[in-house]
Image 1 (cartoon, one colour):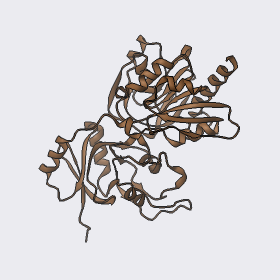
Image 2: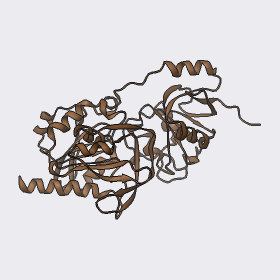
Image 3: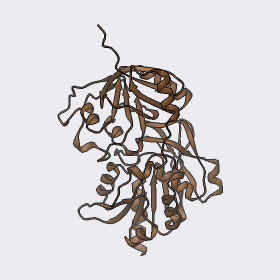
Image 4: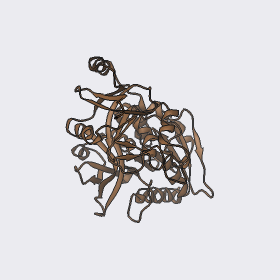
Amino acid sequence: MLKEFDKKIVLEDGSEYYGYAFGAKDKERVTEIVFNTSMVGYQEIVSDPTYINQTVVMTYTLIGNYGITDEDFESKTLTIGGLVVREYNNFPSNFRYTKTLAELMEENDIPGIYGLDTRKLARSIRDNGSCKAYICAASTPLDKALEILKSTEFSKDEVAKVSCKKRWYSRTPNPKYNVVAIDCGIKLSIVRTLNAIGCNVTVIPWDTPASEVEMMKPDGIFISDGPGDPADAVAVIELIKELKGKYPIFGEGLGHQMISLAYGAKISKLKFGHRGCNHPIKDLETGLVSIETQNHSFVVDKDSLSATDLEATHINLLDDTVEGVKCQKDMVWGVQYYPGTEKGPKGSDNFFDKFIKVMKEGKANA
């Protein structure tokens, strides 16, 4: 006898997807629904601050099979809206795991649903675009669910919600450089990478004024990734305007978009965004192609760069969107993808190589 469905997802168009609850089973929530094409990395996804108020549909069929490991979190506080999977495995096989995915989600009030047709759901998002979705009990009447969806408005202060409230430090033995990281939703793997290449890192709140950053005497400034519309993070855009040309500045994800806005470029929202660890990115300077991880809804308008001091450095080979920008004279670079989270001979480590090189030159000329 088949188990009766106890959870469902309702989309704005009235479509319903029935399944079974896991994680915070009684939690009901309205979020934006998106999909991620990664085959692994579900722990990094559920702990990525950029997914605040978003329900993620995993297109890979089996999730949960290697559990959760304490060393692999991207954030200490989980803010993802929800998780949707085809098949959930609650009996991990991994000598490193400390708890199951369901246990982690239950502890952090994250609703999950499994057993539904994720292929059909992902195709709907691809064809119709990202939209509001309501995770609720299977017994919830459709008209009630649609009314809740219609009346729910999303806030525009996502960066403020995921940013740290006070500065914190991550030090490394024998440091060569001091980096100030503007926390718009920074991932811990980025901090670990900066430490590994000889940088002491001071992580500060997103709305820290430029004058305070200058008092820290950084060798370089890192603008982190984060959620939402980059145009809403006005304080960061103004900080970039004030500090560009004074210090090397590198931006990732949302940071890349805010750099572009600070220089006068335009930003637009993609139909369903880019989320996955299999995006082919071409370096326009070298011609090399690398496979990179990314998670974003907004993108820099390529044509608008011609009226700025920025030039495109990377493109996405799937849809020709801008994946990197630079202003050589101001020592400013940005990339849309996640740099340095995975080491490789010709991968995104080049991003941090540039950062180190420019900071080294700055110290030599000081």
